[in-house]
Length: 106
Image 1: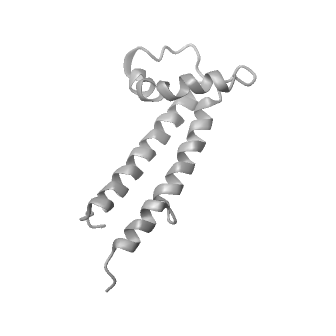
Image 2: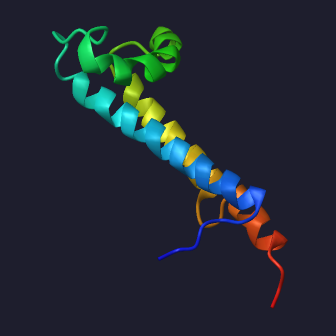
Image 3: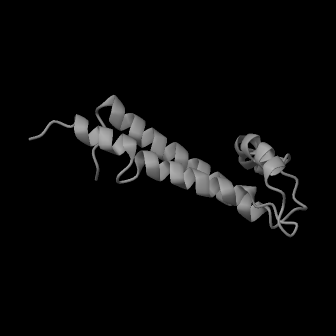
């Protein structure tokens, strides 16, 4: 079992990683939901998925038109968030490197 982080930087690293993972998961759900265009995302439990993702997808749809009638913008966002997650909290990410430099050498 891993110990809980003790420094603010470690907590930030953990929370940022979890937040980006949650965003990725929400956009993956949106990818699946594009297969069912008849579903109303403004009703029921689907609002939980649509509410945090639509502010990013709306403007992106104006830049990237559907390909063959399929909305590809959730795929674009999964790629962007995955890249951002790797750059910030991946093994060689910026926050990870800052944490390693801040740790006292034993």
